[in-house]
Length: 116
Image (cartoon, rainbow, N blue to C red):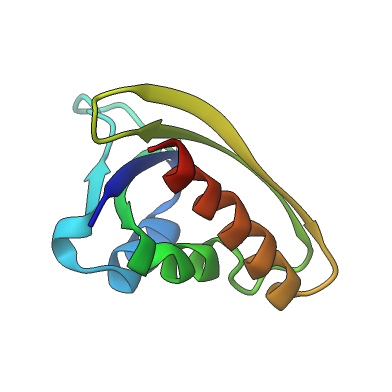
């Protein structure tokens, strides 16, 4: 089964924890900034790299569309294809409901596999 890697920057601790819980442990890699002693890091600076297969599209779409006050989302992502090719893109959603947001996100993610 093919997989792509999607990197999301700017996550906070809660987002990172929820994302890790939504996927198997080896599917999510979290990168936290190095903070020198006595310095403070930005609160939303965690980068998550998620291994996505076609079987996990719905899980990722559900996490991205999770209980938000509005269903307007613009997330910058980096996609790493199996052949090593990398591409930066945006997931943009403007939906009236969580289910509509999930459908839009799932359709976008499915397109990634036609390019893989």
